[in-house]
Image (cartoon, rainbow, N blue to C red; front, side, top):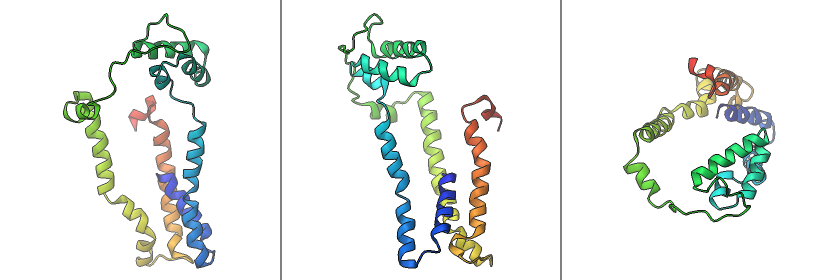
Length: 192
């Protein structure tokens, strides 16, 4: 999120010199580029090996695992784990197999909300709580209106809508949040 805000300020600052009738259109249209890149990237992604195994397509799952794993042994180990979870016997190595259907997912949401395990309940509370407080804290409004706040405080520049204080705030946020983001999931991450 922080990198996106910084890129938004930088691109808007760059396009602020365009004529008014053209500038806002370019600024608005440039926001569609990440979505286009994401859509193209999704088309290039392989299917999930778990989903392929659950559909009985072991050959396709093995090809995907060979492509994304570090070694053939790791791919075979992952495939064996997925087959075990899906209820497919380990000796079954055909490309297409019949998979025993245990459930079609009926009642999953009901069980998740009404009867979660204690671990799932903690995860739900943390996830929903973080999103709730992130939205209600108003930090997005501060970031959005920071150019106007600086203008009212008397700090102005040639183009007050994309002022250097806003850019520097975004850059500072990006620089300080980057190391933390990189350390999530590592041993060093728990000491921050």
